[in-house]
Length: 218
Length: 108
Image (cartoon, rainbow over all chains, first blue to last red; front, side, top):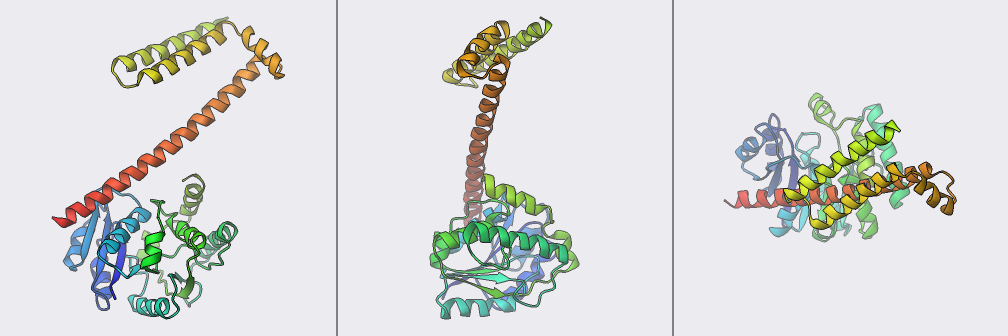
């Protein structure tokens, strides 16, 4: 089975090498999409000997995922895993999700930080809760974590989900399409580590307003 | 009235710009014609505001000035909508190009 790990990365030069090596313990087909980083993300990723697609300008995480997923599909991926470059996720947890996808014949497995034991900062938890409410109203899906970058898709769902949102709203978009296309989905617990690096680097709470705006107008 | 002079000056300035744009071939003839008629129309309203009152009364708005504001608002909102759509398409095109370049660069 052809498994591809797609990693969007923007200015992750200081950690990406180390994080990719962790993933390489389990998987060979890794595609990093360097989203117009202004640091040495590309060089660091190349040093870890993975495929690197470079956006010459920053287009956002949604666009990066689209680039990476299209590449994986073109190269015969049966299963595509989307994963973050910042080390918040644990690569050990990829395989159990893939196993679940295969055994349960799901189209898409969504990682959820709220199903497991992750310690999510309070404010973050509340904003993400609003996200789940919004998703429930719009799609009817009962998702506990709507903005989690850890997902496993089979080929069918990767082909049929069309990411149109270039920026952060793609997470909601993937869910909307999961609902619209009637894909068989399941949420599974994943660990999300809130390190100093990720807190500094990650999305700010104010980003939620931008996502809301994008979802309505784009 | 003084306000009429000021507005007419501004409108003349805008029309001049439109003519310059057309000369530089920045806009199509259709666009040129549309904006020219539009601003000449605005100029006419400024010079003969009573015309709008005539129309406004027919439509049941009451005051001509109100009608102008309503029409202006609708026009502006519609334009914003159009620009939004256009910008969205441009963004999508840019992303497509960026993706294409990323693939091409990797193949090298």
